[in-house]
Length: 262
Ligand code: OOG
Ligand code: MG
Image (cartoon, rainbow, N blue to C red):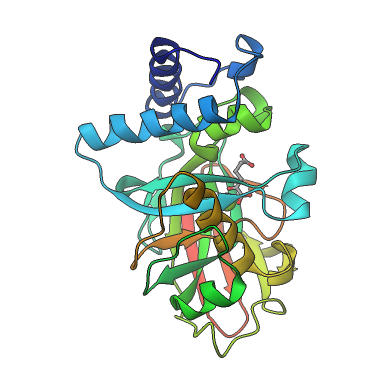
């Protein structure tokens, strides 16, 4: 760790205030170029602690930057992990208020719900599939607190990986029956198909993103508990949205999930 506790708390308060007030900020590594990975995750943990202290619940986890399309779009090369709070959860078909967000983008994702705990190190795709209760389509709405979505990996980890809202819906799928690599996805904005992909875009297999998450948590002595919702990461580039937009994600054999922006 390169930052002291007071600086970690100050940066967490700053980033969370930007989230809650929908204000952007330059990336934090501009002022703290020496911060390391432990500092970045410590800031994210402090944001989580602040939310829990205010009565929020943690309802899931997410992996991000797990596809080459996303890594290329953001100019980074390693997946990252964050948490999902209860108020991020948008009911299918309802409206997201863009006044509460800075510059939202949508991503097509496969969400996993676990039925058994997953613990790394040594977690692999097979263990993830055996521990998966079901998979379900999800639209993640990301909203980096950084100006113009310009960041490096440590800044984005500290900012809880741009997490802001998510919608799950469509049909539950059995991970044992589906080939998640060839599962096709179509993202539509205002009735127009705007992004396409298949599950293999995410680390070769979306379950690999969940295994990576379990292995990373394992290093900290933590596990993914049974019953956890996990977003495995955007399959395509993220697509910018604004008030008035309607977005639908269609996933092969798993129906569709929609959200509108006001
Ligand atoms: C970071 C979050 C990325 C994903 O699915 O790749 C993410 C960002 O691009 O702002 O959620
Ligand atoms: Mg995502």
